[in-house]
Image (tube, rainbow, N blue to C red; front, side, top):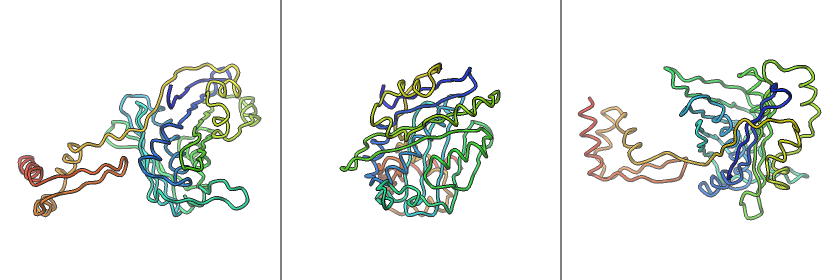
Length: 291
């Protein structure tokens, strides 16, 4: 199963685990956005955790969006996922490439920066969305999400996420794991998690991409509740952009109507949509009708 996800419990159902191999999903994002290695790692890590957060939602079509901006050269990272396993995203500068001196590891923390925030918005199909924001801790993404879960969700959580990039900039491995302590956890469960030998998940999956093996290595008695997949998917369309144009103020629409063509670009999938004179006339007609 491509981009497969395991959702499991362990330690007598006092711990919940979300474990994902996201290599193909991150490679799709890299290809769409022409990502350089450090940008690929930053966006890929954020996409992977966001995808798991989407699967955490209880009802169909509930959505989660994440915005990260730490003041670094990569700029803003924006991702969105739903409970059906679809995720999309982009970053302001897809062409950032920098490594840490001495280790040659991708300098995600420098690229993202720490002078900023991680903001999560959940669309739970209620009258108002739920939004929570925390300060960035390291810019390395994993630490920042763990801090978010601890502060905003008040759930003690381990977040492991990583992306390895080949010399040709293609994705070598990518994955994410979220381990949550459930409300009835015991002190011995905390000790068990503290003693886990957690290696970088991108390294683990590079050596063996079977996430079942890694799950049982960490939790021999784990019980798998669900296995599913995620995919990079943008739901944009010409019709959706046309609907968005209909929400503009009448003055703005009249200004747009003076042009022979309107060009709209989708940041999530890099598609361009063109509205010719006939399209613009149709938009103006429906706008007048709605008003």
